[in-house]
Image 1 (cartoon, rainbow, N blue to C red):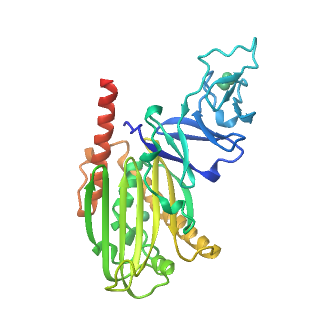
Image 2 (tube, protein in one colour):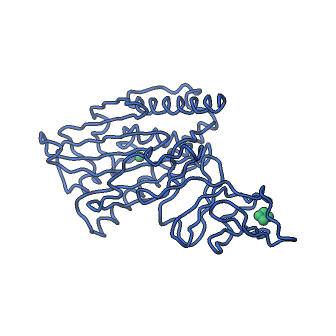
Length: 343
Ligand code: FES
Ligand SMILES: [Fe+2]
């Protein structure tokens, strides 16, 4: 399998990189992240160019990272600035690749392709993770499954009534009126539930009970970036008269069959309420860790290393958005590899 390279991948939440280096594999490549004394974070290839020791197990000294094996030291530009061995020479071949990295939306985003094409304006707009009118809770989950299975999971929310019965699920999601559309390389999937009783978690978040109108709108952008708006209003009232929360579900491939899953859920009401934060964090973590993750990992084990379409899956209407996203991503990966071969 190949991955899209010329795009931003979410690499870490800000609080994951403090005074110690972080080692993380992204699209199969080992990366080390470390913070310099100026406060900025840099991303270098994580295997030492000498004998491939893991640099993230080393120490940060004078804004450089020291390899824990033979002590070579690399600065944030990837150059070897110290060789404690022998004559101390630092040949130019002794260096680490540097990856473009930017800080946005409470985290770090890495560009795995041509550094000259790393354009911050290509990031999606998740303003609610930066706007002081919003509070958000966030988490990170590692999953032993391919990232496209994780994407399918969010693009087909018909699963919530079964997999999350009694928490995020109700009986209405499967009956929702669903609209799927493609706009350029983006896929949108809107679910509308009129005059239905919503799940216990939705009722708790929005302080509701009984029948309401509700919506679940997902926006997918390549490679695996999703924004989900969950809203509720009185039956027959406008959306503006109701309330909504904005969620992100960001899937970064670690390898072909493992994924870094970053999620956040943001609101512009019930601000500065720690108990509410804790409850939102715990209900999301429980659903994603105890319900989605084991199911998708089990699904991956059942599929083995087979590509989804090679297994000829039965296609249901709820799969439309996931299939559109998969086709779009496959097209972009193909275009990228054709361009690389031509250039
Ligand atoms: S492996 Fe890093 S210095 Fe030898
Ligand atoms: Fe789920």
